[in-house]
Amino acid sequence: MEPRLYEGDRVFIDLRYTVPSPEGIFALWDGYGVVVKRVEIVRGSDPLRVRIISANASYTPYEVALDDIKIIGRYAGRFTAN
Image (cartoon, rainbow, N blue to C red; front, side):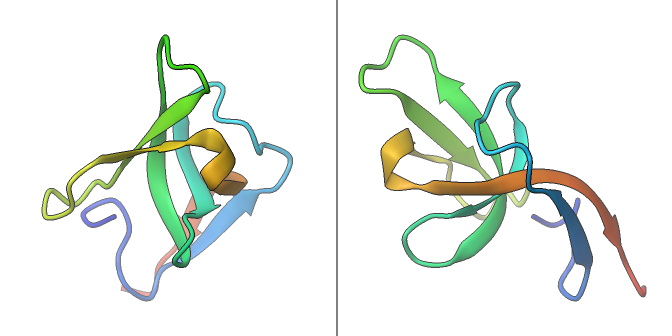
């Protein structure tokens, strides 16, 4: 998520928010690992799909069914040693 988050940052995740409404930055399990990404709802999709977007332009956004990921919680802040 560079330039928003950097390697070594510690993030604070609010575990109360496990649904991407309102849209925003979430920690989630994407089937490969835990990532912190922007999550947007794909309007009009049935079943519900979400778009997963990195702040780093080197990573292409992708869409998945909401049921194929597990949202751990909403990003609440970070602590950095840099």
